[in-house]
Length: 105
Image (cartoon, rainbow, N blue to C red; front, side):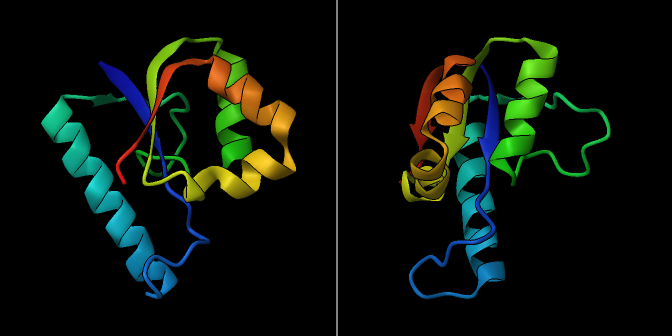
């Protein structure tokens, strides 16, 4: 299975700092991907990280490559809530590129 994982750098998990929250998200997502044998997909060869942190950038790359991907992985529903509420049409378009949306928590 192939997937893209999205990390929200702007949420605090359990009152921790932003850096600690990012580390928790990344660790949980990588553990989940190893357990479930999800191969990370990197659409943009110039992307610095193996994950996305900006939903708009992910949507742009998805539109550019027009590729259907097995799953979008996120730490929790809260990690995408702000984007989904603020840009509901873009969230629907983004979801259409994935067969399933998975959260670790």
